[in-house]
Amino acid sequence: GIQVEQSPPDLILQEGANSTLRCNFSDSVNNLQWFHQNPWGQLINLFYIPSGTKQNGRLSATTVATERYSLLYISSSQTTDSGVYFCAGTQGGSEKLVFGKGMKLTVNP
Amino acid sequence: DSGVTQTPKHLITATGQRVTLRCSPRSGDLSVYWYQQSLDQGLQFLIQYYNGEERAKGNILERFSAQQFPDLHSELNLSSLELGDSALYFCASRGETEDNEQFFGPGTRLTVL
Image (tube, rainbow over all chains, first blue to last red; front, side):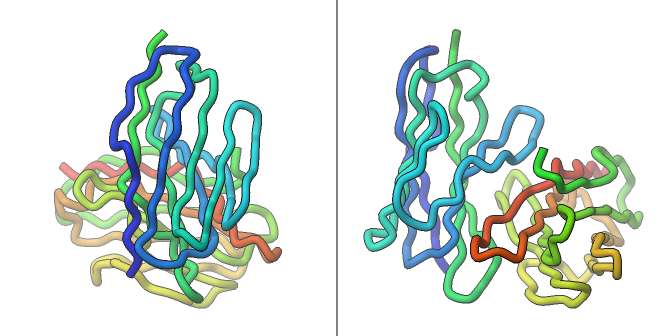
């Protein structure tokens, strides 16, 4: 099955800073999604982005499917952005999401 | 709020016991997925149901079983519980549009003592 690698594994920022999170896939993926897991454990959908670029407020994401990677940009970070960010995708006709190990973001005031 | 509900939020039980986790998908969604998040294994797919039928199986133990009922809610049954079964269990659902985006419930945190 596909392998999902996220980088960096941990990131500490000051409030107001920008960051870029990267997700690499070992093979072609479909249905790529980005999630934010908040400190209470909830998985929040950020983007469904199999290809192209999307923006939602201070967050944006870009997926280059042909090169098997996706990027999540967080601008003007806030303390509420803290948590763990996951990317996940499916392969072929399978509907099971394969997740990366996550990237822990800490935003300090 | 994703529209997917899960009960209970927390469950504490002892080794050897059996528990049932419940999930209600978003209104109209026919597909339900179960995932387990543990410290050592990360987030892993367990099983998928579509309109009452099992569609795909992942890393689900034989001690675990699931079903989807005619009203489309799903239950995950965990039996002969072991300490290692302590984890966060998520349910997700997907709509019938072209997008295959999965929406996750708030999870059930299971602690086996």
